Structure formats: structure tokens, C-alpha cells
Length: 486
Image 1: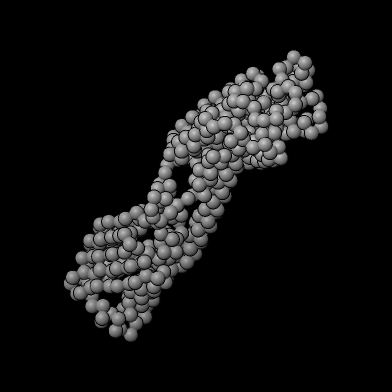
Image 2: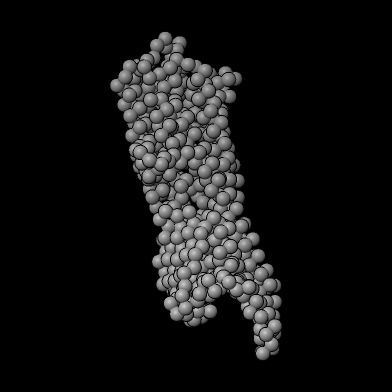
């Protein structure tokens, strides 16, 4: 039971899927379902704390307690740094508040650890520093969940002013705590550490009050981030909501069983660390998504540069060759040159169109647009019946070229005015291009000394991606081109 909340969260982080059986249902759970599952599992662990004797749900392991505190501190520092980078990129107010909240929590834990190790001002300050910082940090996180994602005008200046204000405010807080030590209530039980596990709900009232306050604040923050996850397409609010759920239940567990400053390790301590582990996973996925988008943008820019070079260079020269060769009417050699140059010009235009397409656009949309544009040049109409399908980039480019070549042949050589393009994605990809043109005899075309360039090109492109290519045609009955890719 100790790690049930974090274990369920890590299942989602790993993108758990399965091919069959009941386990495959995990892959179809929505983010809302995952938040509900984590909340129920964490609350179930709280119910266990209240129903089972404390000795059965806590471990007398001071070293493990110290290890969890250290892990929480290190992860909080790393996550604060990562979210600071996100704020510098987005410049949004909610990201600034989130960064400040995590930084305050990390700084409070760091100061508490330093004070405890150096034995400065006694144990009272070492207890009040993380509690005060935890409350302030939770308030900032809650404000980040509730405030609108407004973009600040001067993001870098904002982080500098916020850092200065944070440092000054935190120094004043520590100074105030040091001055008020004589009148501050103790957050640590008096006397020697208990020989056994302390009873439930038995601890200093000030400590119980702060834990209950943080539980409520983090629960409100979880609701705010959950609402934002529904309203936007971002995945980060979902992870923030999961983190706040675990944090709220951890504080509830520590309210019921106050082991924060004892040698006992409870479920609340594990959930408290799990909260920051989830934050680290969410930040890592955010960074991964950012670099993927940057890489995609760089690829798209390079493709567009190549398209511009082709348009301004090769395509222009081919168009010049076509115009000059067509002037020599009656010369068979010039006619062949004009035809070859015209085919090369059309092929270069298709390459320019393919390079200029957004790489994140759906394949069926791109395929339909290319077919319509190719047919429109000859005044023909295209009927589309395309399934939505995810296709590898190399396969997509080959199939687009095949469709463009088949539609061009149908309108240019077959005189077709109606072309149908069908893409069936059930059990592999099946592409079918049919027209109402004049048709031809495939056996006669294959027996020529120089077979049709278009047929050879389409067949080679299909075989290059492991597909099967077939042409069915008869004179006067149109043509059907089929490509099957397993």
C-alpha cells in the first residue's frame, strides 16, 4: 500500500499499453480517469491509516526518512529550475507563480536541513522553516492553478524582480521566525522520541493545523489544474493535477499520523515524495515535447528552403526548356525533349508541393489535396474516399507521388474528366485510383522498347516501400491503379 498512488501514476508515465485482454483497457483510460484513479488509490491509503494499527503502516527507519527528505529536496530544486526555464520560454504569469511556489518549498526544506545539521537556534526553527515555506509554496501553486495564463510583457525582468522579492521575503521570514522563537508554539513533541508509534491525531496543534491547511490548499490547486487540463490541449496541467492530488492526500495522512519530524516513515512520507516525482516526470515530458516541436520546426524550415531552391532553380530552367523546345514544331527530337522536360517539370512541382507541406498534417488530407490540385490543372473532378491513417513519412511521400502520377496520366493521356481516389486503412493500406478515360492495353505498353515512364515510376515507388503495384485497363474502359502496402 505504501506506493500505490505513485505506482499508478508511473503506469501512465510509461504509456502502458497491451495488445489484448483486460490489461489493454489501461491504454484507453483518459487523463480524467487517471486523476480519479490516483485520487481514489491515495485516499484508500489514508483509509488504511485510520483503520489499521499504526504499527502496521509505519516503519521505524530513520535512515529511510532522511533519504525521502533528501530525495524530495533534490527533486524540488531540479523541478524549480526546469519550470523557471519554461517561464522564460512562455512568459506566463501562472508559470511564474508555479516556479516561485516550488522554489519556496525547496528553499524552506534546504534551510531546515542546514539548520538541523548545524544545530542552529534549536529544533523549533528547523521545524517552522519547512512548514512556513510549505504553506507559502502551496499558496503560490494554488494561485498558479487558478490565475489565467496571461503573458507578461517583460518575462526576464519579471523573473529577476520575483527572485529578488522572494529572496528578501524569505530572509525576512527566517529573521522573524528567529526573533519569535520564544513565543512560537513547538511543532515537535516534547521530550525523547516515542518508543512506539504515536497514536493517530496526536501531535502539536500548530503542526496539525498547518498540515490540514496545506491539504486544503493543494486540493483546491488539484481542482484548478484539472479544470485547465480539460480546457486546454496541454499535458502539463494533467501532471500538475496529479502532483497536487498526491500532495493533498500526503498532507492529510501527515495530519492523521504526524510523522514529519519523527524517525517513523508513514504512507504520507511516501506520497509526499511521490508528489515531486510526478512533477519531475511531467517536467521531463514537457521538455521532451518542446524539443520535439523545435526539431519538427527545424525540419519543416529546411524542407521549405529546399522547395524554394527547387522552384527558383530547377523548375524555372525546366520551364524555359519546355517553352523553347515547343517552338520547334514538327521536329521529332525537340518534341521528345519538350515532353521529357514537361514530365520533369511536373515531377519537380510535385516535389516542391510535398516539401512545402506541414509535417504534422494528416496523411489523408494531404493525399486528397494533391489529387485535387493535380486534376484541377486539367479541369477534371476527383471523388475522394479516404480513411484516416497514420503513415510513415517515406511511405506517405511515395504514395502521394503515385497518386499524383496516376491522376496526371488519367487526365493528360487518357482524357479522363472523372477520377476516384480511395484509401482503405483496414488491414494495411490499399490505395485505388480509377478513371473514366480512354484506357490502354497494359500488355502492349509493357512490350514497348521504352515502356511508359509513369508506369515504371509508380511501380518502382510502390516496390521501394514494400508494396504491391497493379494496373487494370482496357481501351475505352478507363484505368485502375492499385497499390497495397502491408
